[in-house]
Length: 56
Image 1 (cartoon, rainbow, N blue to C red):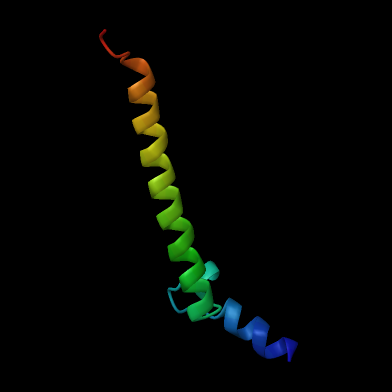
Image 2: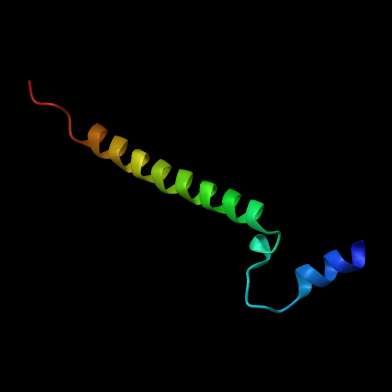
């Protein structure tokens, strides 16, 4: 019921709103952060590779 959902999400328990949905939200959050970190690392690697051409 809607009142229970609203009470759950607006309860002040120190938990961020994007993690109050339970384990599914935590899993999605961790997967998103993992992909973001690896994506940033890959972009930095590619930029460094492009900035330093190979000697021939």
